[in-house]
Amino acid sequence: MGKRPFIISRSSFAGVGKWASSSLGENFSRADYMGYSVTGTMLKNIAGIPLSGGDICGYDYNTTAELCARWYTVGAFQPLSRNHNSEDSIAQEPYVFEGVYDRSVTYLQSIKYAM
Image (cartoon, rainbow, N blue to C red; front, side, top):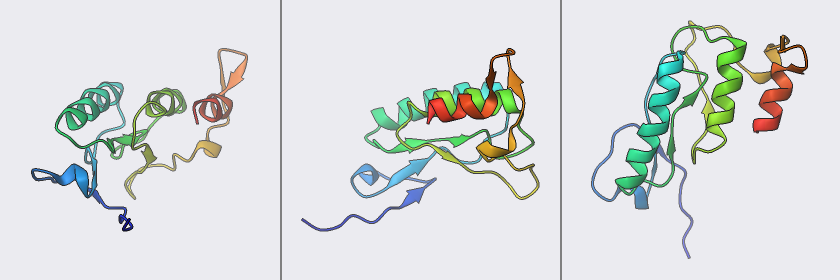
């Protein structure tokens, strides 16, 4: 059995799911775009692209600790789940979020649980 290269593409063609994965493209750091990533992933799966997903925490604009933690929770159920953002945005790696959510769990703990 031959080895399959790991290719992430934003564009596609008939049968691309056999050879490549698909990103949903550059999205915004907003809650509504987190919802669009769910339906977009499902639509790509229906179209025969099993490995697809959006940019966790959003690509453009600055995210918040709460939005990023929620997006990691959603991203845990998407086949392709990656944290990717633009150079103009603030850092959004899990370790940069030090705040506490609801007086009991930190955002970092919430992200770790999701991962």
